Each structure stands twice: as structure tokens, then as C-alpha cells.
Image (tube, rainbow, N blue to C red; front, side, top):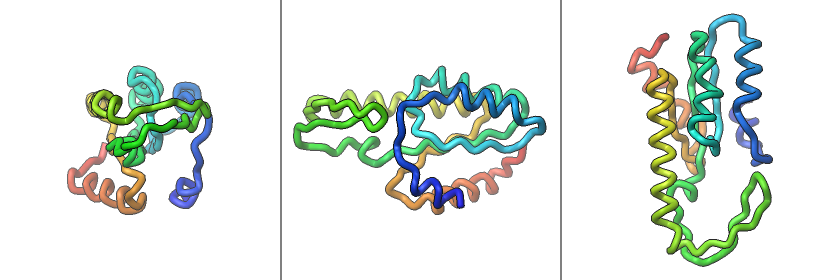
Length: 151
């Protein structure tokens, strides 16, 4: 059911993780496992501020960072307009002029998120949307089992 729901999910407007995760933190009386699936298009400080209280209360937090391969590789060649899926804004882009800086920014953002999550004992996995979600989740669970991750 979860995989089916995720498969049908569409991009929505820009959101923030802080308010909903604060509400979840207040609602959860017993320690448990929280799985967070997001594109994490927020500043790393805001992301960690949203997630850290759950970990501080003893919850096991697992983060799946979902990205499209085009976001990870930026293989575009032709000058064109890109649409922000959350705001609808059209952005003119010449890929050859932007590619290097864009990829450097993406790599830095991913490394920063992974470091911050790892430093706070939060499992972090980057998921490529071109690969089947069930296989990616299975690989994660297998690696978790091999590491004996029981908190």
C-alpha cells in the first residue's frame, strides 16, 4: 500500500518539514520507527531542526532522499525553460553554462545532508527514482540487517 501510494504521488507546492514533524513529535508517546521520504529541497539546518527532535526523544529515524536521475546528472544539452514543480515558475537555462556549478551544488547539498544525518545517528539513503522503489528499500533493509542496526 505504501509503495503504491508513493508511486502515484505528484509534486505539490513548496513545503516545510518543521511543522508536520513537530506535530508528529508531540503525538508519539512511545518510542518507534519513523520513516521520512522527501526530496529535501530545504536548507540542511531546517531539515535537521525538523528531524532531530524525533531522534532526541529516542525514535529510530530513517531518511530516504528521493531524487530523479536528471537532478543528479543534469544531462541536458539544449537551452530551454525549466519549470519549478512546486511554484510553477519558468526558469530559462543554458545547460552548458550551468552544469558544473549545478552539479557541485547538488553534491555539496547531498554530502551536507548525509553528514548531518549520520552525525545525529539518523539513517540516510539516497534513492534514484529511475530504480524500482521496492528494490531500493530491500537493499536498505538488507544492509541494515547486515550491520545489526538495532537501536
